[in-house]
Image (cartoon, rainbow over all chains, first blue to last red; front, side, top):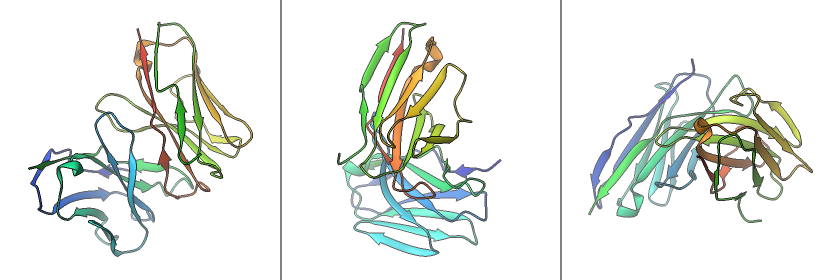
Length: 112
Length: 114
């Protein structure tokens, strides 16, 4: 059973601090990794994607991929109350050329 | 259009009725996905289209569910003889070419079965 695991949270972080969200995956052959943000009652919104080992930065967001340890992280610097949402991790299913395996999400709360 | 468009945004219907949900993907995107998300739950994959073809219908929950895509663009998800357990948010996503490209979601259709 291919799995993507995320801590459900809630993860509470003070405003201005760094929020660190983690995701582990079971299939060592996975190649594509995605982070989505989902506000309550809204649809998922793509935040970042990463294909190579290491860090990828976009504004206040950094995705970190470690294929050897099979985890991918999302760091949010200078956290704002507007960052409060559920963050979904998705990983490609190596047995399919189109399907993603989705984590259940981590609820992040940024406290003013 | 600029983004994925879904209609209706909300649908309330009586048990046993048929419903049609529509998705208009981002222009030029060949891959289209339907998902279902029940309250407080994760994403449940329903079906994938590449162009007008649906190589994978394995996620459809029962034979009451069907989907089609015409002209490589608009897709319709039909649920016949709706049941209360069909109540959920139905999400459509598209990507440029499928594969493992990023998927972009519409705002969803919130379906409530009375």
